[in-house]
Structures are given as C-alpha cells and as structure tokens.
Image (tube, rainbow, N blue to C red; front, top):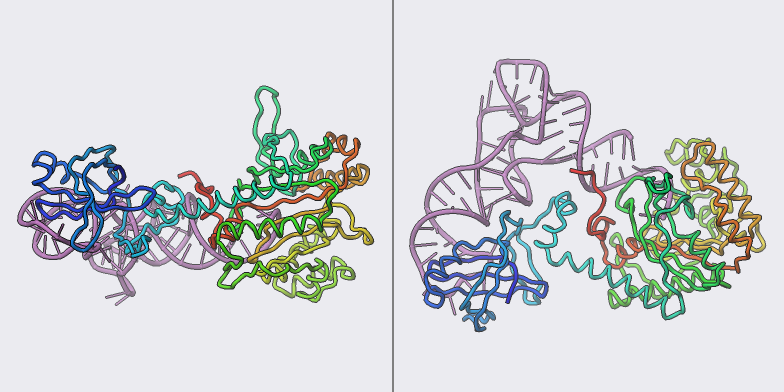
Length: 444
RNA sequence: GACCCGGUAGCUCAGCUGGUAGAGCAACGGACUUUUAAUCCGUAGGUCGUGGGUUCGAAGCCCACCCGGGUCACCA
C-alpha cells in the first residue's frame, strides 16, 4: 500500500499515522516490537508529506478503525518542504472536516499542487469539470455532430469582438493571432458539407480578468446545417439539462443563494422587450442622446462617441443582467451588435440571435448564421472601417471566409457556450479561477 | 484601467491612540506501546510585501511601487 503521510500521532514506542491516496485515508500503526528498532527509528524521521509504502495485515483498533499494522515500510519520496496541511478529522461519511486550512487564495491558485494535496475534496470540482465535457461530447456525438480541431494560430482573428494575443510566426515572417473564437473555421466546414460539427477548445482574449473571465478559456462551438436559432435553443436546453443531471443528479442548482430551476420550460424574451421591461427605455424610439441620458440617470458617465452598440450594451448590463438567475433565452438582438448573424425574418433591424443567461451571467451565445455573402461582406467592411478608426475589438475583413460563403453555405444554426462558466454553474463555484486548475496570474 | 480591502513565523491569525514581535498548529528535543485535531514538558523560528519619508522611536502614520481578493467598466 502506498500513499502520502498526512497525519502523525507518535506515542513513544508506537505511532499512529494516516496515509492518503486518491481513494481516501487509512490509518497505519507502527509498533516497535513488530518492526524492530532500526525500522522504528525510520518512523520517527517521517514528515507530513512524505510518500510511503507499507506492508502489513489489517486489524481493527479498539475504537473499530480499520488499520494497517505495518510490518515493513519503505520511504518512496521525501518531502523537503512542509505541506501546508492543517489538522483534519474524517467524518463518518469519509469526508474531511478541516480544523485549519490553506486559505490564501494566491497560494491556492499559484501552487495548485499544494492546494490539491492539502484539500483532496477540491479535486471533485475538476472531476465534475471533466464530467461536463464528457457529457457534452456524448450528447453531441449521439446527435451526429463531428468533433474537429481548427487552427489556434490564425493569420486573421474573427468570430467575436475581442482584442487578440499576437505572436510571431518565424518561418512565415508574419504576425499571427491566437484565436478569439472558432466560429469562422467551423462555418467553412459547414460550407464543405460537414453538416453537424463542433469543437471544444481554448480561446484567447487579451482583456481583463475577473471572476467571470480568464484570458484563456474553454469554449464549445457547434453548428448544424438547416437549423435556425430556435433549433439551437432546443439543443442547448436539452444539453445543459443533461449535463446538470449527469453531474449533480438533479435539475435544481444554486446561484447566489437562490435556487435555479432548470426543469420547467426556459423563458424566451426579446432583447428589446426585456430592456424596456427592466429599464423603461424603448430601444426602438430612443436615440443615442436618450440612451446616454438613461445611463446618466443610473450613475454612469457614458461616452457617446463609443457608439450606439456600446450604449445599448451598458444599459443592458446595468438594468437587465443582474436579474437573470433563472434560465432565460434573450432573443432578437439589435442587428448592429451582431455582425455574423442573420437578420430576423420580418424585422431586419433585429438579428436572429439569442444569449442564454443562467445564474446571473451569460452562458451561451447563438444565432442563425448569416449565409448571404454580399450582406456578410458589407457588415465585415463596416467592422473593418471601425477597426481602421481604432476600435481594436472590431472584426477584420476575412476574404477567405467570404470566398467560402460565396461557394454557398446552407442556412445554419450555431452556438458558442462557455465551458468554464457551465462548470461554475454545476459546481456552484463563484469564481472562474476555481474551475480552472491554473488560472492566469501575474508572474511572481 | 478606477475605487475598496488585504500582505506579520511553514499554515491560520492576534498585535489598542506609534514605545521596539505574539498565540495555536507544523518543526526540533524530551516523556508516553490502541491514538483519532492524541496529550504533557521544553526549544528554535520573523529584513512585519518592497523602497523612501515623518519621528527620539514605525508592523501601525505619509508617499510610491509589487502581489492578491472584491466592486465597477468591457469581452464568454
């Protein structure tokens, strides 16, 4: 039997210790008579954190605890640095009650090895994370989606509004970008006839970090030909439900102290209606000045030169977003904030797009993909103009993507879903850093 | 990026209106052959985040900086 020494209780000529491995802890009993003096001296030199192999029969102590009476022991690895192990007791159910803990968040994130070694229950979060991804794969595979890998290093970045990381491709003597989204490559595959396709992978956005954002994060994107955004709503609703059932066994979650019920039908509400409902501002009537005034009323100093999309976004973030605990599809976004989405049938000022909110934050973003190459070119060129004007988050004109669309892309529904955030939701963790093993930190 | 909070022994934390550094656990030495956060006695351990300043005197006050957390702003 092998493991790490996590507790020692020496009593002179006998010693109790606890050995931990991923399956739990077991008590060891070292007796001088049994081991002989030279071996028993070794026991006295053991430190918490040492890896130890032992051989011996099992017995029960008089309090009934199953214990190994050690006949032979071998030091497998010496801990030179003391692990920040606190005192802890094992409860009836096998879980650990910590009487002191490694509490410093900086050490926990920087030295995840120490965090995990000292708090084995933390591993459960990452087991759940793996289960989330496994369940998504099973769900999509079962529905005929093909999992693919597309380039992370890209000559042009696109598919989202974000500042990229830049890197140098020496052999090509060119600057490349770490992708900010998979979108444009996956839609090229739709053009190529892979009619159901998905990728789970890392995206990189060169922006600030907080409890909802890590500069590198894991995204699911999937696309299905001949679907529209209502089909995607059904897909994501079923998928998230299955993930939650698989990982938690139920359909109820807790976010910010409130119960979140995923069982009933999820609310679908128009973006414009919801903004009006929560803020009283009618986006159809309000001009930029009226928007700015509404923001000012709520204590913000809006910069009107940022343009209408930013103003709308700010108003949304201020008045709507905080109230979205229960699962909600917000549908039909203003077309000007959705350059890759199809105009809504019957109302070209809106896009056939939805964002899914659960637990107070955005979990997914989806639309009926824009497949009209001329319209797409016009919108990308508008983005390009904003980019030329200095907006680093505006998208570039991707001629190869437009060429692909010109070959003809079927009507397609697409989805992007933040895996880290979904993991937060099902584990109840409040910070994205707690569902990422090595979150981004400044170098020491 | 702005604001708020924090950084004292390996870990968790005290440290009052400025008076010269403390506890518990861990470590080390001693006692103890069925303990369960073992117990008891003892020892050692600190450029008080970094650098300046004020002061007879700074962990505590002032300034700058570093790191982390939170809130806000923006991206998922």
